[in-house]
Amino acid sequence: MNKTKRIEILSRLRAANPNPTTELEYSSPFELLIAVLLSAQATDVGVNKATRKLFPVARTPAAMLALGVDGVKDYIKTIGLFNTKAENVIKTCRILVEQHNGEVPENREALEALPGVGRKTANVVLNTAFRWPTIAVDTHIFRVSNRTKLAPGKNVDEVEQKLLKVVPAEFKLDVHHWLILHGRYTCVARKPKCGSCLIEDLCEFKTKTE
Ligand code: SF4
Image (cartoon, rainbow, N blue to C red; front, side):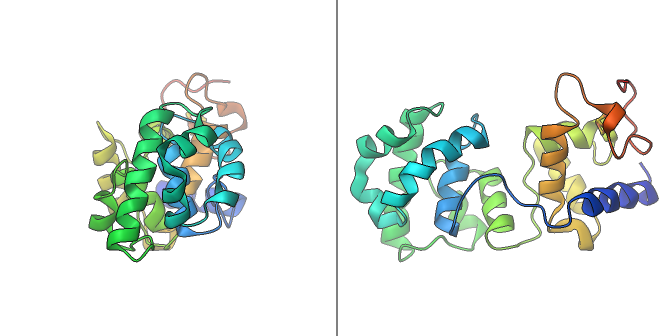
């Protein structure tokens, strides 16, 4: 895909949604970190349902730690992989309390050292809570980048590197959310809604639907 097309795609996504953000509910970097950690293989709607009850009783790492693994499990058992996630939440909170003064570090290495936090989660936190121009590639972004040919790649790392290279600076802060939302609601996995897609004429997917 050429540069002119890429810029036009990003411009249209921006015009349609000038201030995109995550659909996860949070009111601090800590809550965002926990919500993203819980969201692996789960929907944002499912995570929000659980955190609406969890966060009011545990708004800080110390308060979460006081709940203990079983206490956290009680709030998140409707979410997939809740046993492992509860353990990771508690281990992560212990590290935040003991090594980071109870704060979420604005630092990639420190974030990725937290249990249950990989590159994708670190990218989401750095971008959404701290407004770094990072691009977390999830299943939606991977699919949209490959179908459209905006930034094709064989795996999420390749797509991330390609997006970082080809997306102009003015779009970098928000491209993560535009592509996720586009993949979640329009360029859906099974049958993309090409007929109502605002970038249909620019997309290079070979088998578009009506
Ligand atoms: S035209 Fe179809 S394949 Fe291309 S981005 Fe839109 S929905 Fe996805």
